Length: 210
Length: 233
Image (cartoon, rainbow over all chains, first blue to last red; front, top):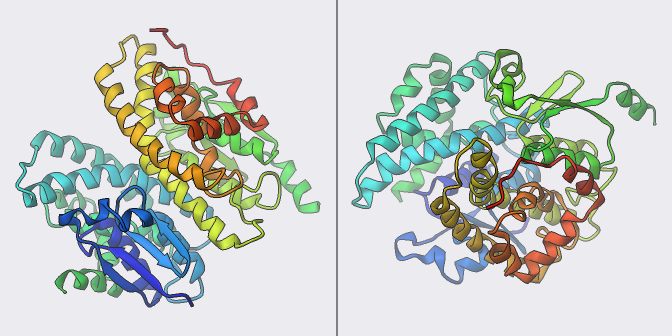
């Protein structure tokens, strides 16, 4: 098996998506830290790995990939028989993978940006933006609550990439007042408790302490 | 052949609107695969898509929706991925699974560049198309500041494309794939706006790539239905 390198940051939600997948699959990889504070991701040599200047970038021998959800998909396919099965081959999975990226991600990442990352960079949270994005996120979470009354996980009855892709932004929002949107929805809360308790996710969080 | 005949008995059904870019994305994919399907127009002007019967098949009230027997799918890029995978051995090789040298790497490249379209290209282009076509259809005027801001972002994305297309004829490699296809409908509308000349016209490889992918017979069929009531400015 060709050596795997993941260039990114333990604090980057997109990087965490890839780390979680590798841990779920029990696939060895080398983590290469990218110093984002110094803008390392916007310069060579990183730019040659991802011309959009974003983490993570994934190398597997001669293969170089970027975009976290393309990387996780590749890992799940390539190592299908190893570790947790993260794909089921069910067509519904494709729908909910899109729902995460098109509906959950925009509102949840804006809420993380406003409430967690802006203050870290000495900027001020915009309460109107928080309110507007909580309203958008609530609509998405209503759909999720209905969905989770029909299946144990978002993609179906097994844990898959669909659930995994949500973990980084859920982790961020669990540390903000937005958590109230999760707590008021019983099926959603139970799902969150389940997926965030997975050992692979704990390993991802442990990377932040190193 | 027996399996195909059985499937032909229950045709694919696509719910959508011919002028919707997301519907066009799926229509183009169906035509690239040479598939028969029934098209069920959804009356957007009456708000049909936001009412309970439609919401039961598409919980966010969005088009298009594909029905294949008992299966119901929404999200255009999920539908195209499903079609491309189910019919991977017929029609255009949209996932590059028939690639001779290194099919796994080729397929991974398709995934990367379909994410790029969704995460970088679409957020920059969709608001421009909205401003020129939908905002004016609803009786407003295009917001020039929004257009200019998004045109600048789109330009930066297309700078990356220009460099990429120096290395390969299409985004994911030397063959046309789903990654290229996903770009076609919104770009078709963009090319009817004043932004086209600088954003696409000013980038020779992007322009050549556009002329190629928009000239494919599958898309030409779809383009016939793509008409907004656009106001000339």
